[in-house]
Image (tube, rainbow, N blue to C red; front, side, top):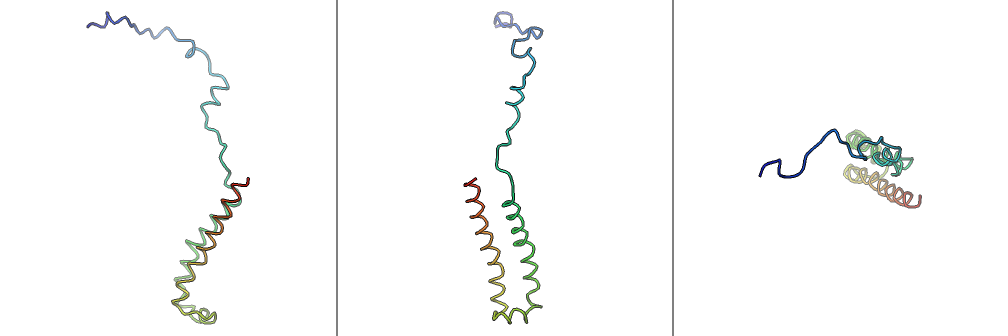
Length: 108
């Protein structure tokens, strides 16, 4: 079948009404993503700070534990106890902060 017989002829000069009109303000609003999501806020920065403590400060303290055996023994802990309990402290705090942040975001 030849292209002449199909009945369709493409004419680029003839523009449709929707493509020839200028874009309006509602068109640009429909194409831009809305920023209606929650803001990062104070609770987000508190969580970021605690993650920094958990991933930077606590591992540094663990590296210094052998040289601080006198301080550790003054708390009644052995070196093994300190290695086990030191990472638990920021883990519990991160858990509490996550629950607090979730409850706060639901109430707002």
